[in-house]
Image (cartoon, rainbow, N blue to C red; front, side, top):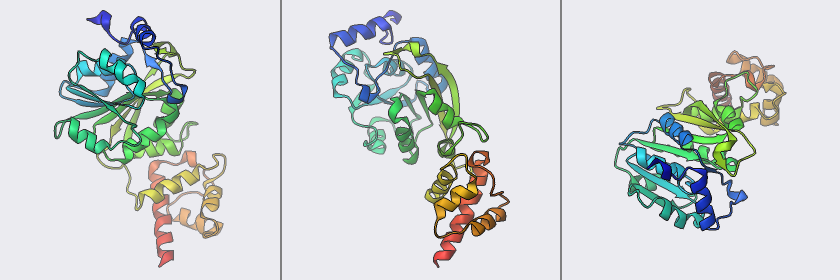
Length: 296
């Protein structure tokens, strides 16, 4: 059946022509036209014949088809109404696929999981994500505490590098920490522009996020931890002392900030990019308890 796969340039062109489909820049539509790349994505995602898969933005069904072949059930969320009749046609021989016309940012994913998969099923999220909205989608998936194993996504290389970055690198920042607080992040593969139609102007990577059983650090208050951490990167070239002074203004003076940092053995002249997740947790916790005590 290989010659008939959706993920070929000729079949993709044929479908686009038949449905007079025009790519919407606003939806970041780039369709995959290389079966090998799709098989690699699936291999890295660890899907088995028993798995359930959630796909975001199936397009004309290139990845969906491969997921249907390798997994037990696939539920794909598609926001673009024009693609629904196309997907009906391209996936008609797979009876283990459901297409849900919904926006992933607004969808109730817990309900969708309950209605489409077996209780306790091993569930994965796999997607070729539109570049302009990658971060909000991933943050929503991570915040919702979904019963999933991992998330394997094709995204812009630069964003993948930031999400998987380690301290003391140019790509490391609050996004790296936010992602790595919830998951173990690995860039598993680089992807050439030539496997897409139309070709994007950016390089792509496949990023695998494996959900953590529990956070790698203890934080007193997650929201506070994330906001202090973000503040430390507000101006990358500035020291954490300057960034935190701006953040806590006018409630905390410089002297107090230096004192609190030294209580957790952190030098106030360091920059955000040199701090590990453990050090950020220590900073977040000491400032949190100080601010709480101050309120009493």
